[in-house]
Image (cartoon, rainbow, N blue to C red; front, side):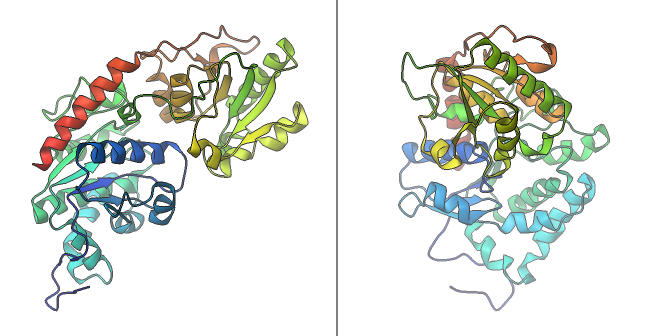
Length: 386
């Protein structure tokens, strides 16, 4: 490895990225990792020789879950090291991102890590909701991206973003940031409305980036299976009103048919298992589908009735043909869940049904149309690398 004596960013000879993917994968919580896998798989289907640097907060976990695609992928956390030190105010964080990158020539460790970016043609933010109210220090990513663009003369793009909720007072700085991007698309209508006045916004692809894959990775394909109640309730709402409503729905579903098996799906490692003891005390011991089994796929049946709070649980289970009931812990989750109703998930909001099981309808998601739109956008974004 060569480190310049003149305190300037130098490339790492053994790996020169063509594309940098910025994401929030690695904790893990299934959704962010699936989004990343969707992008990597499609990139290498298009060009098997391209090199990709994944900028993620936990590179070790990503490396284990996704591998290196025959040496074509590297994972690092250089940008996230800057995020973690950023102030929790969007304007201050944005400026911090710019200043920290400009100073990283003399920073111990960051200088050579950014050497991977030196020959990249595109820095792309894959889908997610990690730049919004509640993640205020993450606005440093936008300042950082602009500084990287200025230094290395690469293109910037985003797809499938969830920016809402966002405080209106920060919209001017947000507008300034996004105007530096060659392409931006959102996964929900409220986010689209925030940025629709910018010429770079793609209003035709309001859909999650996981529609880059053509089917649900969790669908088993098995027919004529017994009904199960599959539960995914996140730990941070354990004692909330929404949690109580969802537990009430589980009670009503078991009252309808006591033979229904209870299953807990661990989308977020460990955190989604905190409900197990309560479910065991109130009803019966559930079967657990661990994160590892979810990641390996093919564990949901079309006959399953899903009850939960996680967005990608709602999305991927409905793409598997499962009926479901969702609860939104806060405004952010409400926006995410609501974005799936217009595309045909047909899941029911638990807020509307306190004392009875809602009508459970099978999803009517137009898979081919949504996949076609998302892959057309993918082609447009990849053209920014030429």
